[in-house]
Length: 321
Ligand SMILES: Cc1ncc(C[n+]2csc(CCOP(=O)(O)OP(=O)(O)O)c2C)c(N)n1
Ligand code: SF4
Ligand SMILES: [Mg+2]
View 1: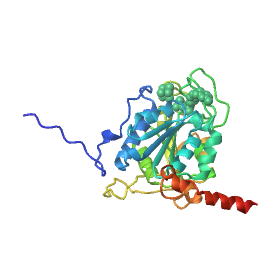
View 2: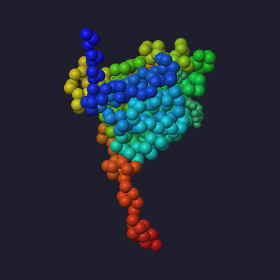
View 3: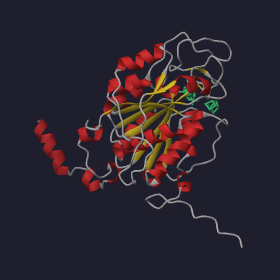
View 4: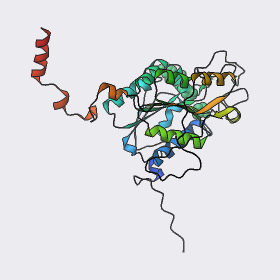
């Protein structure tokens, strides 16, 4: 007699991992972005986040297509190139009770979106901001982006003469309260960082090196799988233990280090790519705290609350006379 298939494992809110999946990816096979989507699915499932309580945001690029490939049950907004920060700011202010996760690219963030990115970092809005960093504009056929390292070479032989923008150093300087770098090929580190990111209250900025197998995975690239395997220098061994989990880890948990900006810069000159959590501050008020916003989502307040009565307007006018 055939045995019945094993029942799927449920998380602490009673959902199987299947409920965290998205549509079938249309990205190239082997693209680092696909591995990041898989880790987001695992992290959200393991943390027991209710899919309907999640807002997925993105800009434009192969990376920005990713939210279609995880958590189909969540809310999603695929915005304009480089404009994810402003659209997310509006959405978070309208409903700060959701978990917000944004997926951007190095082009989407560090080129066209830079003006928006820096303001998002300084506000400490509650949001997980992921840069899927491949050093090129994958969607438009592989031109260098502003995170491409100096001396890095395209398949065509073109060499990048400009210094890279370090988005992590920038995010720390501007005021993001959880900043780290990881690699799409390091399942364990990335999963731990994403779980900790979900638990953090404030802006999380994760720069995840995510090789573009079609345009930037060759000899001479500093964002290839081979280069990362050789030069990835994890600065800390981290794991995240959620309060509802039994503590069952194979190494010491919760180690977090502050890294001097100098260290990030020195690593560049030594060709090393530091990964891990660089900075964390759990005390700084978020933008929601600063604005003293009510607990209920603004978008759901009734008109009787949001619209002042005629007498309030008359009083205001009288005060100006
Ligand atoms: C306003 C505007 N300018 C330019 C483009 C063309 N464009 C689309 S995606 C992209 C770059 C994407 O690079 P990145 O954000 O690194 O994502 P990747 O494809 O590498 O994941 C560009 C320049 C656009 N769609 N809209
Ligand atoms: S072109 Fe590059 S970034 Fe875009 S899906 Fe293919 S491998 Fe990924
Ligand atoms: Mg890119």
